[in-house]
Image 1 (cartoon, rainbow, N blue to C red):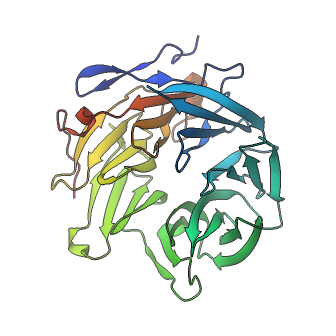
Image 2 (image 1 turned 120 degrees about the vertical axis):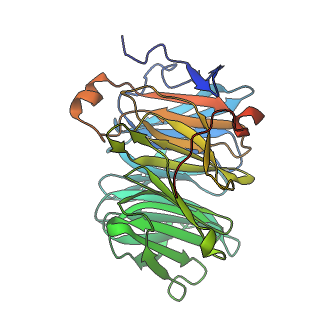
Length: 353
């Protein structure tokens, strides 16, 4: 029996709260680590991809009652995914450089581009947004470029050259943020991508793992367990804190997610097996809640549904430790019901500036 087969409870502020486990309640459970996990923009649809080349989508109803809508198998692992702005399809970036589109009406998986055409290497990040009233899709790869797609035509419309390989990306309205190797950060205005680039470096000392845009600034997570909050209009308010660590030191921050409608609350998950919610508006950057602490698992992904009612997270190995940990790990996809108590400081732990 898997070491996590019966795990369905998490500690929240000292009390026991039931989190719903959905990944094993299917005819074909996830057989490898989760590679992408996202909620739809307006619907409570949850998409997950795994290193076993499988894709799945669930509809979440009521109190986190999940119904598997469809599943598919790609020709190669999916590294990233994004719902189109109208939630009609999911755009998937592949490990070999191909870009796929999964229709949610027909559940057919079709190629937008094959490997070696639009991207020459793995598509590490994808995003979708509306630009000047038109749907646009973005893919960023290890081939050092961002491709912007016309979602209506399903074809590339422009390219932006990157200084290094893309490791993470986020988009909000017309603003695009890409985190690259060698700590590069590139900000692009998609309305005028050639004229409004801004190139800089991460404020953190180590490699960027994840990035997020929020009203007034950016959040950056790194492989040493640190998170930086940078404010555009008030740089003096910017700060850093240690979010994830083990006795030996900091471990990678695998994912960042802002609570919809309340950007002062940031969820982080990491290779220490912890999923936390932080109040970044607090002067002491307090960790409000830690849901899981289940070594040898790592929490590889987290995301909120569009209403901020559900926090989905994946327990799956991220290869930040030795191979033996992978042999002991299992892959679980969990749903946590967000409650007001998650936003109160009952079990504080301080980071650092």
